[in-house]
Length: 128
Image (cartoon, rainbow, N blue to C red; front, side, top):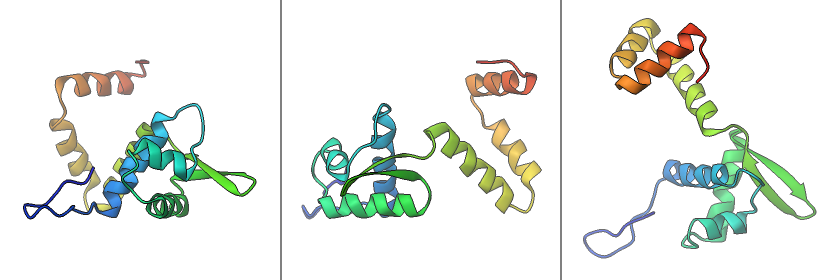
């Protein structure tokens, strides 16, 4: 959530932070889609309804959420789970760089022991 500045004014979150918070809220509601009002409530009610609705529209336009029409009310659910979205971002990052192999090698050398073990299992075709 947004904090306060040294002068006591509320600090604004950037759109990326808000989008991440809204996506996390939708991922937490695994059993159903949420309306903007429900997302607003789950986020603590500090954001204006219009702000939540705008963020959901941006996420929809980016293909990150799906909108379920229910009469005039729309409810939103994630298009992908968190792991799928992270994997997609990793692929896109590798595709953007001039040397994806070196980038991948450097990424792998920074893995924790548990992450390295999981990666080895995946490469061997073992299920987690």
